[in-house]
Length: 477
Ligand code: ADP
Ligand code: MG
Image (cartoon, rainbow, N blue to C red):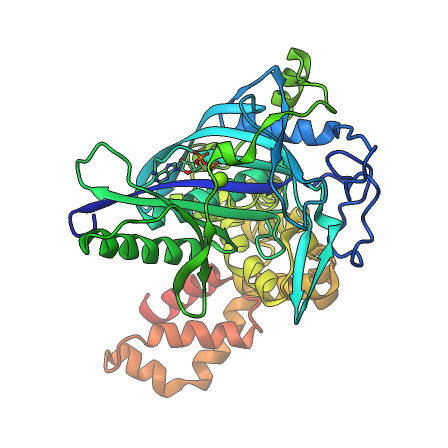
């Protein structure tokens, strides 16, 4: 709550579907192509060309709709959204209007400790426009992006804090990445977030006039921009001025939003069904096929990691963040049968190395089966946890199996009591004074010192349980 006001937030996210070709023609969608390399008469809007729908784009839209609990329209319609801009050579964008492919879904996610559910009003397919770059007196246009398939996911005006808005965005990103329909890369524009914000007196049933904060490219900025916008609007209302319906941009350097343009209403776009395209028909068969291909979604998977693998919430949260990480974890755990052990190794050693080396989990030089074998070696007592760290580093460097590393380096744990007793005797003989102090009780905590000394003498290879037992017997027994 803000000074007796509440904020109302609704979000539109453009999700770029990662098909190989564009939505209405065969041009490549490759991100790093040379300027205007990925173009053809269709994507630059030459008269006489005709669009043909990309089947995979439709499938990706349906998958996303299903994951968001939407109704899938069996027959949806493309419409022309008319406006003039140099990056839109046809003078209209092909989008969907009153008959979008997905409608009436919901999404639930966590905001801190609380669970939040947001309605998905619609998710419709459309084509992206080109990109203008202004340089001095010139404007240059690159049409590579023109015709890239987008799915615009629109929420109801259901959120009331900047934190909810940011978490909503992160959740959508996580889901589309789980589905494999979008890489979720905000910096490259694969996801673009428009936040609609208004304020009203607490209890007022009527929505206030909204502004739209456009194309914010990080969820941290989403949070900051909305926070700023709420305060700005309340200031206006408090001064007796009016909020103007407009599109604003976020300036991350100045931490401010500023006016981009006044916002059109739907009638300004003169929508009408595109006569060049047939309605998109989605069959029952296709829907059941796509439904059967849906992966277990993050929230469900996290809950299962807690209930079936006995993981703490925190571990489950981290491990299900990315589908590839969750898969890696389950493969590792299956090999060693130690679910918490696998989680510990991945969350500490493995994620640290991956972060330090800026690697994705799929590029890890240690494969899940190998990490599972390493954990099994510890659990069987073949190597100690300490030695395992050395083995792990070697595996990371060489990609070798843990058994091979242990053999090559002679790292097998010493579990022969006679051999350990010999080491213990040597250590006690070399530290007669400390033995004296320990026995007289003059110094406390010397036991740990002896354990450390024996472990060191064994180059870390003595079985620590045996070292403890034998020392107990000799010193305290
Ligand atoms: P448009 O397509 O012109 O942007 P929509 O009616 O489709 O407009 O709404 C776009 C987004 O704005 C939706 O997410 C909706 O929930 C949100 N929205 C609409 N009215 C308000 C309002 N008064 N305050 C905050 N958000 C709003
Ligand atoms: Mg909009």
